Length: 278
Image 1 (cartoon, rainbow, N blue to C red):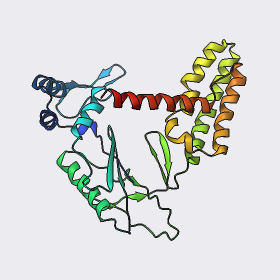
Image 2 (spheres, one colour; image 1 turned 30 degrees about the vertical axis):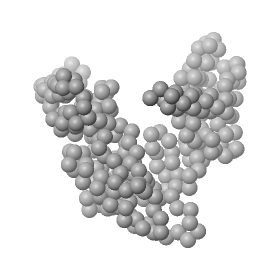
Image 3 (spheres, one colour; image 1 turned 135 degrees about the horizontal axis):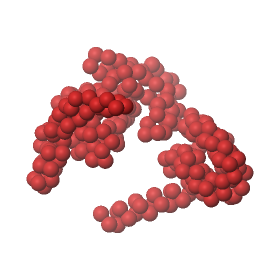
């Protein structure tokens, strides 16, 4: 798995190039013109305290923090697809991952896919940050051999044992110990603030709202992806956080298993609805 990192991805969008792709996708001409007008001739200045810089005009990239920027970037990269059936390119806004299945020690299709992606980035004004791009090898063979690193623009990509992808820690042994350990640590830190709020004699409903918005959101982040394969020990560690919060607030809270089950059922219903009402 190759986890790609782009250098200032949203800032590299060329509006005219984007509009050409939108036209090919069949978007309305008026909408394309509106997007082009939105992305070009944008005045920008910087304010520090009472000092304001001179104004400069930008006609490249998409505004930072704009809800349209991830969508426009996704549309720009819609034609970045895998060429070989043994590979997959997974995209989420500007997070891109190349997943290759290597069999019989033949890495040619995977490495060719990486080189093709590199060339595609060059043609679309996207710059790969090789220093932050990481590769993770999942290999359960008894006789493992050293892997040769992928080369991008003359530089070797670092091979790592684990990496963080969309907020979830992935490990090359496909266990979730590192992920649950990180989640537990973050949740325990938030318990300190819950205790401080309890000392101010806030009522349980307010404390429960704080718990749901901070601690529970940490414990349940992407829970449908990883909780099902957690070890019993990991699950107990997560549930201890919930029990501690219950003692602090003084009310019963949903268990980690209940949250996981509810999210899975909701996800299943969503998938069924998508297939029933395309």
